[in-house]
Length: 256
Image (cartoon, rainbow, N blue to C red; front, side, top):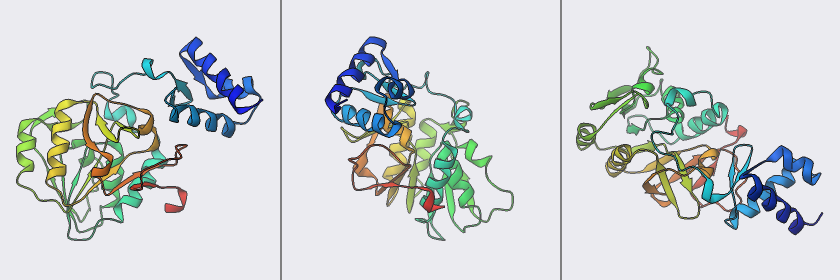
């Protein structure tokens, strides 16, 4: 079957059902998973579909993540664990002893916290969740931002937390995100108040890094808080996307 014929069949299936599974396409097209993924990537680059976990959907029916629909931090602990560990290990190499850094809330930055336990660095974070991953014998110094506690994110936030950030000057900020739009260059988060806090932290930092596994490229969220070019490096995992900005670093197993 020719490539154009495969693309027509894929779009027919996705328009009929709203979503199509990779395994079903492999059977329908009698082809390999890698061939199906190349077809989906090509169609996504044309804006005809968006790839989701295990398949693809039409752009217009794809859910845009808001705080109400976003899973709680505890629900994301076991998702893409190896990828997150590799990203955190690679990002830790950017931190010099003696640095004062901001660690954003999130499950990937939690792994970075573990990587820094034996380092002589000062960490500022709004995340109670990260503190729970803080070893008792750690050498680093940690400051927790105050503010209103948010149980869903297991962190402190709000106006008081943003105000406290004005007292700090960070050598580097390590941020998280809910979604990244490669076409528009937007980096997104599901909660508007959280977006303000992230922007404030980035403003107080000499350099900013983003830690986001490849699943974030197939997700959009309600609020844009930064652009791809605002980060010196975006650490991510292996992705099927072929055209990536120069500041995106794919972290693979060799980084272990």
